[in-house]
Image (tube, rainbow, N blue to C red; front, side, top):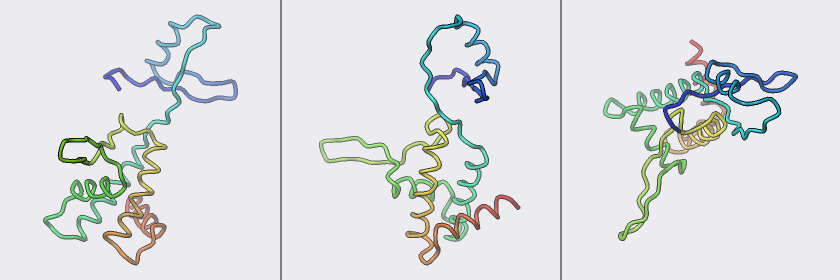
Length: 143
């Protein structure tokens, strides 16, 4: 996506209305009755992103001082299949893909987060159910 600011709209009973300056400016350039194409993307949630990183930090802390939240996140990305793939003469290479705000909308991030909970329970915390882990992280972030 470029460096342009997002155009944010709010749904009302009568339709979508601009919710920030760039959206208002963009709408001023559209003549009444004109048809425009819109891509519906729900912006990422900051609190959900913080919950993800709290989860990564908690797992890293449990594994020891040589493990960081960033390393855990890389493993989780690989294990959930959130990867970039390149074919080479020697075979296929995979490495962790970005989860940056401009790379994933909230729907994509929510699905990734749910897969991450399963991976963490299977690979790092056997015996812990994803729902229980979700609850513990929500309590941790709320504190």
